[in-house]
Image (cartoon, rainbow, N blue to C red; front, side):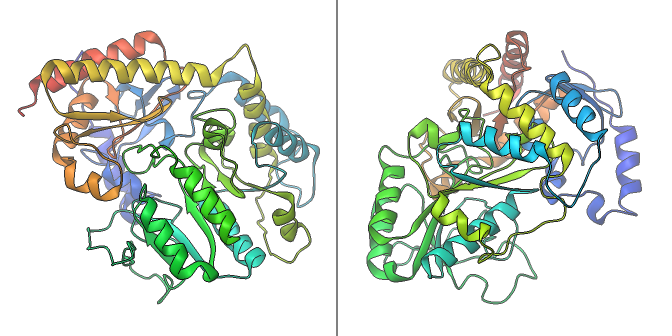
Length: 439
């Protein structure tokens, strides 16, 4: 099954890109790909092919958006047809209304909707809205969670471990140079899955806390599931304090269920942000929320704008995606979870047979693999302390050589285009790679 991968053309293109693109890429996340950022030429279904002709079963899926697989016919046809009428009107059109209505049908908290282009934009809008509605400034976020790259929130996503403060909070650590001085002043950073830290923080700072933002499943760090009752605890704490609960569903939205994690866990947040899978690979993000709160945008009290918001192509893709997710014959979410569950089961069996101490966790449609010597990972600290990232990097390289593309961050995404045959090929490759690795 080994491809004997050559990356000569990709290497040539990458060196050329270094002369015109900063770092040779347009997202710093892509710099982690080995042996260097690769160039891809075509993608169809569950497979992606690079410019050197190497074809891979793809579990990166554009970092998650390709929930239906690459180049699905129904999505391409919807976008192509819609774009014939125009691309950007700087005014309203029927498709954005139909897309919003379709989102409302699926998402429990979507009493009103606003569209944008990226997850970062949606989070910024949620923050502004939460502060305006509550007349407070502070927002609780959690260590190891990513909510976009803006100055207001890019803290402690992948920072060195520090000793928690007596109240359980963690000192802010900026994730980039050039961030505005004191931009962390309105953030409170806590460890996730820690009930007591939440209680202590609300006891000490309740009158200042506008909102809590959380990934309902900690997908950006090891796909950590919430402890039983934890999301309920966050909801109750916010309600008692007249603070808002914001779910960042940029990854979980429409993937873990048709209505996102809020439907899966039956916890309705005050506000929620979506992107990635919302349009099957086209650029769109969504802010959803309760009518009373979202109406502050509608009245103009809270500013939200964007030239490309609700453009024709993205709205056509969003509408088509929502219709596909609602299609009882397509059963997209069932396929994702069944395929992911089968792949997780197979990896766990390999792990048990070879006694590798791997951790495979997540809901199925998205999950994470790490080498922890069998130790539990329940928050960012336990992830950093227990995960052997060098072993995982070796695993990624070995899988690429066998035609399986997986994410360097440990997160695996499934699409409805993956097949049982893809799963078996993947498990066969994983078995060979893991057997060859020295533990």
